[in-house]
Length: 243
Image (cartoon, rainbow, N blue to C red; front, side, top):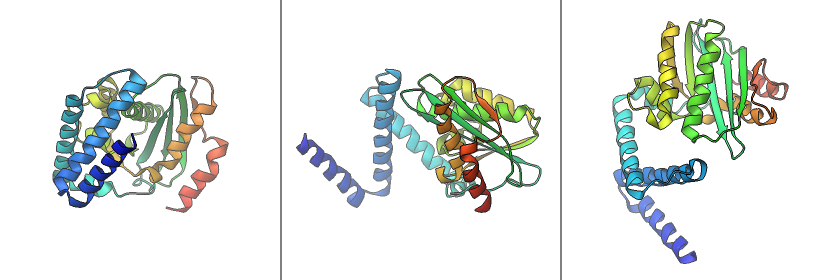
């Protein structure tokens, strides 16, 4: 076992120091795909063969290359590391999720152009979901929350780059995030005069993530909607100050 570990370390080191850029990207995508296959086996009891894992890695690499070469705006947005307010008259909706063996927590934060919190949602579901499907479900909660106060111009901000690309392009291939869930999100764009998907690194989505973690303290399926939980007020204030 130790020898196997040593061989793996040598392989990774050789790819990192001697492999070309294309090979390094494919290697990284392959490692991600194998990890994703492992999660599907653990959480969904679905076995994915090695051939399918490799094909998924190649497909994701193709998408990555296409997006970074043809969509410079999306490439620039990936470096955004802290929350920033939307334009005047626009509302920003941040969503996040967390999955464990206990279930899934969703967190949504709705804020105006001044950074003032309009509404938050914290929801726990006692079910196991793939990480990417969970992200899509949390985003759907954000759409539902935005429809209630009849908001017209919204920014959907998430920290899942792949889902951001899907939403921005209104891609036909939505299966990786659950066809039904993402189709629901895209179909509901028509309820708003403007919908702008946005990507932010996880540090810029901290408040929504903390809301999703807080969901595990609810111990029930009834979502907590309204003001931000008292334990997260200081975090919300710190994000306002750091703008």
